[in-house]
Length: 394
Ligand SMILES: Cc1cc2nc3c(=O)[nH]c(=O)nc-3n(C[C@H](O)[C@H](O)[C@H](O)COP(=O)(O)OP(=O)(O)OC[C@H]3O[C@@H](n4cnc5c(N)ncnc54)[C@H](O)[C@@H]3O)c2cc1C
Image (cartoon, rainbow, N blue to C red; front, side, top):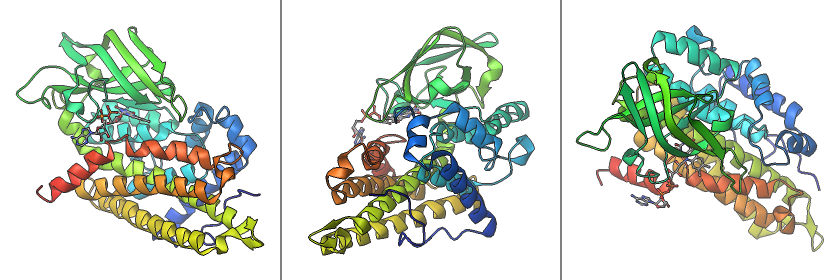
């Protein structure tokens, strides 16, 4: 049985992205790169160390060398001047094409923070390095501060012309691949828990910093990060000391969009693989896709997928029109919907493939392992529903 991805037009998913010629060319070029590097199961197994590693430093450098890491970043700092639509296309197509570059998503969240709040010197340095393929992690969560992230306790105290960090961050994606971690930590206590937080970039080779990978059902790309009297120059502060919460909130729309785009790519891939399977597999002398229950399931999933495309690219276009808009309702809706749909498609894709969907011989079980956690990170879907409810005055 083949699991070769089928062409977008054959998959029955109407392209709701409404791309310009240049955008389509970008999407096609990324898809071609992925087909060359990770088109076969053997290539994917080698690149991911038998599906335990979700980020390959060498491949990501190669990808960046072709201009894809810099494509959505400003030209003045080494990028190509694209925007949110280009970023979504790159993330969606690279996830669909199964190249292990998990570090790109978190790095782009950091790039956005530097675009908004960096000094000229910081933008030239950091965005330039990101365009060349450096990975940057972002550290907010702590063992005691997950959904209630503003209650964080890790300290970033100003001591003379240095910042001294002490504490423990957890779940930090790709910290072990990063050259620097953008840490959000407490410089002082204010009236509200949101006061006094500071963004500070910490090189991963700083004395006193320890990074330990966490073993999960999806690999070991998330890390515990411990800070013991870690000292960095005050020039490593991004934006204002104590202004970190507002700076964080300013980037949440892009963070949710990034998750939406990545999971859209995974949803399309799981859908296409399931469709290819039910078109070929025969039982009772018929293609199983011809049974009404499977046919209707495919129809429902295709419809959900189209909703996801429309949501993701609508938010991306709105951000490109005015990057200062926060879009709490629309960005949370995109994150909520796409992550629920990708989970459903991977789960039902497995059901439609029967026992073979459960076997590691096929990719569906890996899609499911990647999909299930997307409703947890980036703000759980319960929190996204709270935010959407709040925009209706509730
Ligand atoms: C794979 C992965 C990657 C991650 N990457 C990063 C990263 O790069 N950087 C980083 O800083 N963090 C990262 N995180 C952390 C992530 O943001 C948190 O896991 C997430 O915010 C949830 O926090 P928690 O796990 O502590 O769960 P908790 O906050 O303890 O939540 C547990 C449950 O309670 C529910 N809940 C909590 N509060 C409420 C409420 N008010 N109303 C209704 N329900 C509620 C939640 O929805 C959830 O179902 C990552 C996590 C994972 C799993």
